[in-house]
Image (cartoon, rainbow, N blue to C red; front, side, top):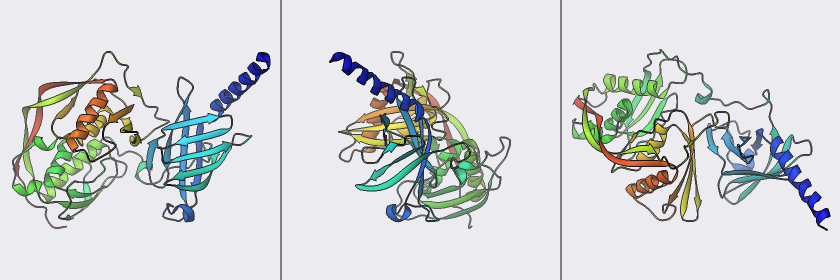
Length: 372
């Protein structure tokens, strides 16, 4: 009996290994617009691309891109057993299908929010792979460019806007709820406590802003900050100077007892991204970005302490955080920040309390923005 069982087991292991080798690549398909209500502006459905690759240990990993929306997120898991394929975006969102005999398509079902929709994925080639449109597809702005915002509309924001919403990685500056202090923070890449002086309205009056660069191409983050600085000078008549002050900080270092964060594969995840999912009472965050971005993730909620980078790491990394105790209830920002700090320490980092000199921006003069 043992002789009969062992060849069968070996056969299934061989098949699974073979398919794990052949499923790597780009798989694309379109969710029906009428069924999902999530189609593109043209009503042709929602185009989805999965990029699947193998980890060094042989298991699968991947990312999902919404081509018509421009967002990318890592998969929670990607599995292949015999011909059965599962791509899990989160506990509630997944695709399950069966690989065709020629291994060129996967027919299955997309499940989201209790709704199931048919979805067939095709293996894409370099010629058939869907390309992104919009800002993400633009070539970068020339490195020696000196851009400014050619057109900028600044309007009073809603009274109840408490937090600014914007994206530094887009071509246009398009945001709501900006205060002048927020713009100064963007221009100088500092925190609110590093902005000193100025009238009370600096932190109280909110603006909605739409601004378009005068230079072609996708600006870098540094070029975006430069354009915001020019906007402050031209429309708010900002004059300021910088100095340094000592602040209590948390220095982000590497725990010598833990492995270093893994460098991200640019083919697998060309854009910085973050996704979160619940796992019991914990929140699991899958993050891809620079250490500067990682510190920003923590400081976006952690208001009581400043973080500085002393890791010496450059490049883009994949970092997984298991954050305990924030999946349920309504934790405060500082509770979330403290939980993120603990999760970072479990992910191979070490945070050291110290004092460090930080740049401060002293506002010498500023006016409400000039009319559009």
